[in-house]
Length: 338
Image (cartoon, rainbow, N blue to C red; front, top):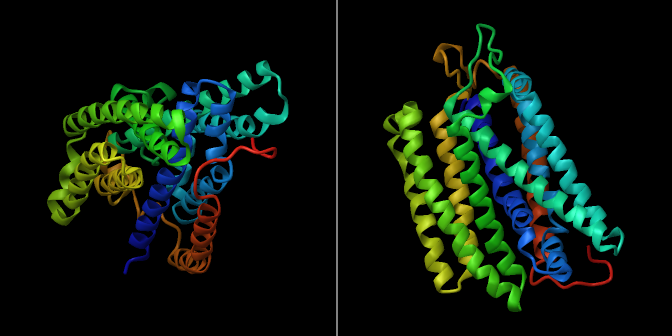
């Protein structure tokens, strides 16, 4: 098979893995202000405490793979999104610092500051991720050299912000379901209501985003005409979204979490299908787009990278599975907890 296509698929797998795993981390941060007291806030933080940094490995791997395998695309993205990426980097750093610093002092004022940092950084990071997806769907204005030809505020159009809000609602729902699996008692009962609310908001934004995508990005469905089998992902997404309220009603929260994960995976797949074979789509002139062939490194580099993935990726999966198995079950607060 074409190495370019294999790497295009692998990038999609890394993106989906990150969105599923760090998605509930970010969702927990978005929901954090809903906790009523310090004990509940600690429960929220400790539910992701052993996991969040490992989940972000998927993002680091995605960025490293983009840099090594599609350097032209990497250069255009990072030059065009420079301010946005600095904001994202600041948000991710603030989120990590907030998690680690919150429990260093028992002062209520100290903890309120870091609680605000945890919530704000999670919200901003999620919104920026969604806006980036919106720009990927809509395309970027590129010049003849393939460089970004717009400004920062050109990235913040109505469609891009709508996608950002949809992703925020999706991660909030994903995080609420995850928290239900990790808590019990009164907190768990309230989480059930929050999950229903988050699902309702996501459903409304999902339907609106779908309509706006058809209107604003007519090319998004072209590949579905060429590859009809890919439309099965849209069916999976609809069924997964519809299955969430059923499993919530039956209180089968493990299945609800799997359904929200399947929703994220299906949406990432549809995003990849809509943009294929482009790494970056030129909104002003399709001929200026960076395809997976134009933006890629040499065949030798792609081959060596694939060998490294074959050796290293099983270790990543094994590490992830071990961590999740070790810290399974309900959250228990102790002296060493956050």
